[in-house]
Image (cartoon, rainbow, N blue to C red):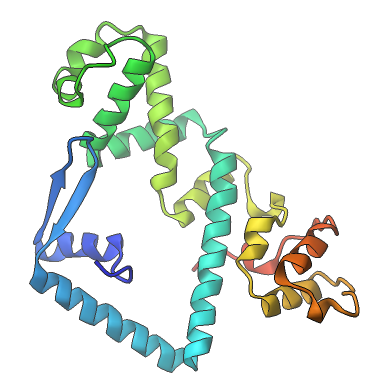
Length: 241
């Protein structure tokens, strides 16, 4: 399936047309099946949307640059906020995540719980996942309350990364984590072109070396990182509308 057709597009088809099937693999993960007619219609729709985007936003280069910027912002926000949020989510958040994920992805969650039960030594490592899934209630009766709480927290922490960046940003804010705490790093700078790095240097008010135009991108990145900048790029401080 083409990358331009997202999970959100397919999910919408589920709601509107009811023509998507979901199957479960042996490891508990889900696989979405979509009929060819629906796939072709979605592909034509996405192509038309992208074509319209190039007309309204200017040249093809401008369109691609806009998409690249959006991806850079999204990737950096998710990487930073998730790293902080997964170490300190509130108990209320964990409960909400569990309720949400148990309802929507029971099979996948069942697989994760079975692996955690094995780690705790509650069941044999040879126990098949489907046996755990169908005997989970009786198995959990043998588990102490503190271990049950540990299982819930472990599953919920893993599930945080499955939420959209906007949701991650909102949850991070609840535990006082936000992009103002971010410091530029190599991963973020690598997402820029050489020309983009020069614009970033100007935004930070840095005085570049005379021969910086002749330097390689990796050298420019090392030079920027060496400045120990505390300023957060403007693009990372704006919330996605």
